[in-house]
Image (cartoon, rainbow, N blue to C red):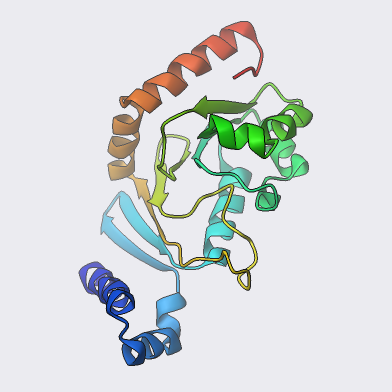
Length: 210
């Protein structure tokens, strides 16, 4: 079923590329194509497909509410009107449970949109801003067994489906055994090692500087 669904969406993007209007209309009329889909890959691993803005927002809110140890949110781009899901109240409540929150963003984006000032105002040693000058991934990691990858910019995607800047964004969430392997690969990457070194240094100093 996963293979069939993947091919259905690949055909959809190809129809966009070649301007096949009738097929696009047929696709959009089918409510199944706007449905969050889940697949059990093996006993300890599942994959969830997020096709809509609301599905992404629900996953993000659920992650902040249920994380036990840490959340890593990689979002290169920032829009000052698009991080309402990261309200000070939600971030403080998450941090108050002892959960570290790491935002990884492009340095210039963070400064231009005053996201660094927003993080400072949270005033929590567990809410961190990690600057990077060379990232494009939109990864979200929860603890050690959930990883989400896709095209959704967690801090810049518009929360208004009627906005001109609203795009068709999709994400795959992997949970369980296979996810732990993906997370381990991330942690051994250059960016993962940077976050790890920064994290260790930050805990030693007891602060939240970037």
